[in-house]
Amino acid sequence: MKFFVDTADVTAIRHLNDIGLIDGVTTNPSIIAKSGRDIMEVTKEICGLVTGPVSAEVTALDYDGMMKEAAVLAKIADNICIKLPLTIDGLKACKALTSDGHQTNVTLCFSVNQALLAAKCGATYVSPFVGRLDDINLDGMQLIRDIRTMFNNYDTLNTQILAASLRNANHVSGAALAGADVGTIPPNVIEDLAEHTLTKNGLDTFMTDWAKTGQTIV
Image (tube, rainbow, N blue to C red; front, top):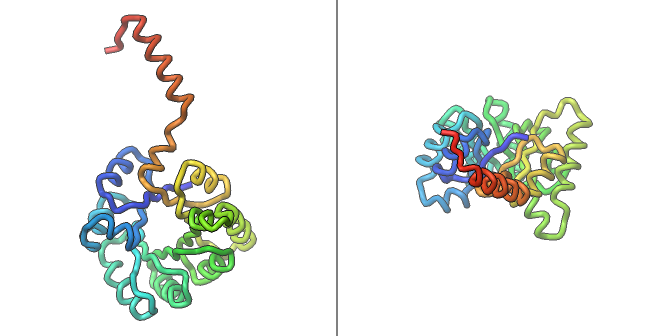
């Protein structure tokens, strides 16, 4: 499963990219607002840090407005992926933009039917939200499994499942096991994936035993 880091924090992006842990970046209006920076400026900087797709979201809700904003966003860099809402106007914009050769990410997906519509309109990615379904006592991970099953039924559907709203390590492993192509994950959760109590305990034991030897390697 590919990792897209879900942030506009360029320091965090640079850090994770240098390690080799991320394959792309996702942003949205809330993330941009949290950064406190100009959307064009920070998006351009992010695009220069990674070679993979950078999702930049339109804020218009009508087709014409989406297309105008998409034209501006697409000029930022070649690796821009236009992020669109899963509405009829968003699907129409998705079809038009995909037909013009742009990458697209259809977001706020909460059902198999919605994912099917996004795939039929040629979306590069569809983003089902795991955590937000869990919040209303529905099984967000089951949606990932169901979309995977549905996509596997049809060779003509090439849309990738981008599991979103992944809030913890269990969400990440669950999405990977469910067959998500990509997970979009906050920086702190990506780093948390390396943590395990037994790893820490093992290292503590090794270091204690090593200190007793009085040796050094360099």
